[in-house]
Length: 125
Image (cartoon, rainbow, N blue to C red; front, top):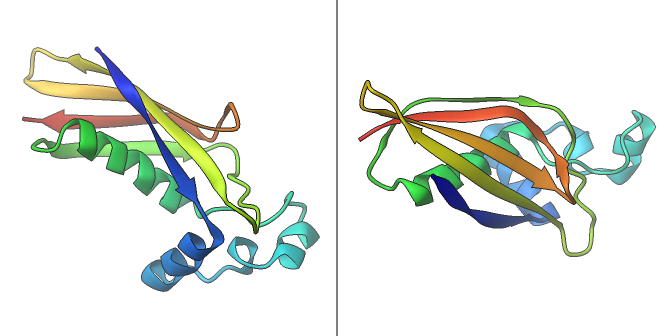
């Protein structure tokens, strides 16, 4: 079953708030000069924040389900410009198994490029 794509905009203000909540104050997530000095194209979103937005999409599609597992690999950075922000899109395919679990295979992109590798959620209920 195909799931309707969901879009999320990530702003620099979101990165500041996430850094406060998570304790991850790595300057590559807030300082353009530092990010570029280590070879990045600019300030990037926290990988765990991008993953959390993918999990938010799953929760929207399956609001009453219990998450049994959720995982991914961080494959490409989400560059967040100072003006406006970056938009990620989360789409998915759900398949019910014989074990009463639903597996949701996700695709998470920014500007058409996959940013999470093998993102998958396994749900009960």
